[in-house]
Image 1 (cartoon, rainbow, N blue to C red):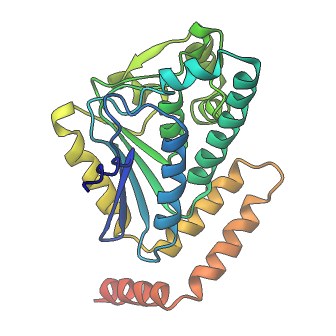
Image 2 (cartoon, one colour; image 1 turned 30 degrees about the horizontal axis):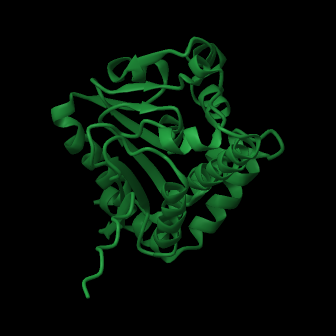
Length: 262
């Protein structure tokens, strides 16, 4: 007896040359639901468990990057008090998986070729770097529905862009074009849509060629700068000490000094 084919996962994962490529592939708009979050958690386990991986590259197989929560998923939960309470639990889980991306030793790169809205843009904000197509649409417009961006959006946008930009975009429920994103601090690079993949690939390859330990310790120091409870200068010294003890660091410094001397 024939068995029905297993459903394709909403996010695929491939690993090559130190890069874990997570491709959002739940058409038409990569909408977020329980299965989507579970798959993101699963692929993070795989990527972080592979000692070869230094970069997590998140991109989309659709024209849209990620349009936020699945509408049918929301419709079912908003119908009852229990469902609305379950929505809070779901949002907490989304907060946790995005925080995991932010705290990961892997450098995360979001390639945004189309709309990244609500929870989809919150995913991108959790990444270390973002490269956007000029034509992409970015924003946290939840206030239009009487909601707020609760998967870390209010916190990360304020930290990344500053209070003024966060107030403009969140309180105004404003969606901006990718061409404006770099100027506002929402992304670090922009490119025409036709050049986006090549631009993102160049960024990913450049980072992946760097020593994983140096990337990991640098991320720790940057995180310490945002945490008033930690002495970031001391974290720099601790990280430097750890790196100086590594054979790879010693060899790289030795080659650099020998080349300079010649």
